[in-house]
Amino acid sequence: MKAITIWQPYAQAIALGLKKFETRSWATRYRGKLAIHASHRPLSKERKLLAEKYHIKDCALGEVMVVADLVDCILMTEEFIQAQSEAERDFGDWRVGRYAWRLENIEVLKNPVKLSGKQGLWNLELLTIHKSVLC
Image (cartoon, rainbow, N blue to C red; front, side, top):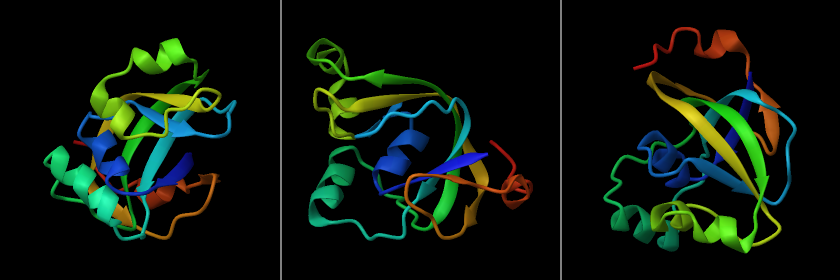
């Protein structure tokens, strides 16, 4: 399974259903299961304010917390960006020419898995999350 490490509160926003797209400067051809790993990086002042705006209190760090299906990678246009909700735009870098990775079937792990993340898309051993029951 592929995984991606995301700063908080962005990873938690995916878990809460506030964020259905992960925005990136680069495209991917990968489609399939994607594990969302919350970075070890502490929240900056700006990201703390964003969490407060959306009443996000639990921002666990350094763990795989969500599994979703990555179903599309969309080149952002002004029209596409304007069609997104305020929350969606708040939880991403929405600029023309960047990419929005569409996530569906978002499932929160009942037992998140603590581990170190990596940059880019990386491989996660399925045995690592085998005992994490989805809720």
